[in-house]
Image (cartoon, rainbow, N blue to C red; front, side, top):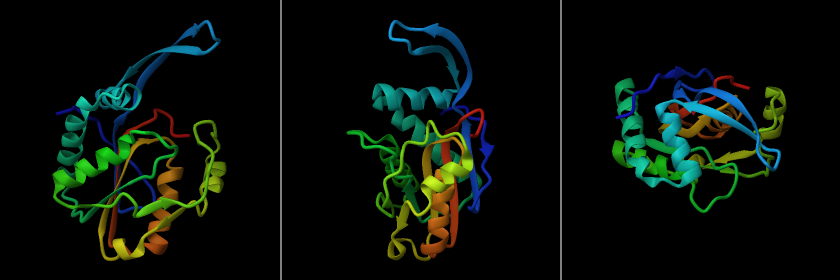
Length: 196
């Protein structure tokens, strides 16, 4: 089991947490031969596992990540009927958030719905957009929900990283308006040190 330091997330949901910070510190080392900035980053235990999964395709960490999430959800005593992932921001052959969300649903013995929330409008990657209101504008009406699949459900919305909350808030707004859900819980594996 991974040692975590949960951080409460405030937003348009019943309750929500990031299990830990992603990066604890990052020291600038200089530029490489192509002019790219290089950093010596110290990650939390969960941040390191997520980094290994996303950037090194280390699937051996899936089990420990999902066990940690499931133990956390059970400790909150949240009643959950359905786990849905935040839709990926860009196409990849391997989508860690989808794989993890499905495993979490299996371990919780609840339904998984990978297409209950879908992105219906292209948006740019938000990594370089630092203004929260600009992020919100870019994400407005970008998501649609499957009301039939969600109606009357207590939903766990899962993502890997919480940066500003703009994406999760946009999805939560769509769920509140069109999902007819009973409760919405949010869990992200990590969050940035500054939420911008």
